[in-house]
Length: 129
Image (cartoon, rainbow, N blue to C red; front, side, top):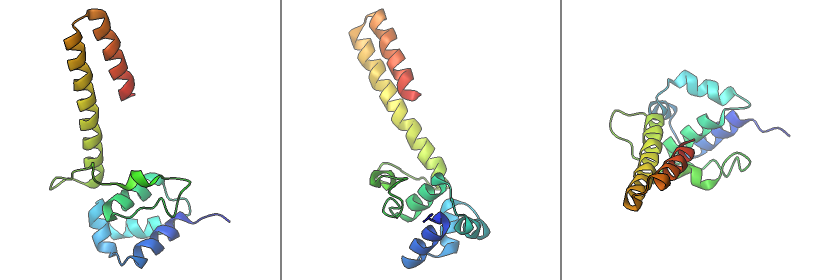
């Protein structure tokens, strides 16, 4: 039997007592969009993830074939006022990548050899890809 992703998400949210207007504000869309999502048999995984992060619900329970539990952990995402959840997710991904790059670059500078610096920068580029 095929899962109806939108209905499963709606059922889970309603079971937990989430208000649709509040959810719409959290994910920065209007209420009609939320209801349209609920009607979709194959709701996109990024939308399910965004709803899960905004509501702090772990949809890996309902969709183990799509997600792992750690994908719904918010502890590594900081949301600043005026920012949407998706903007915060991308900002935090960028910051993590930038920290990795800076660590690799500082290690390369400590080594001080041009050949090894090039190798380490290549590794940093591959991390970004």
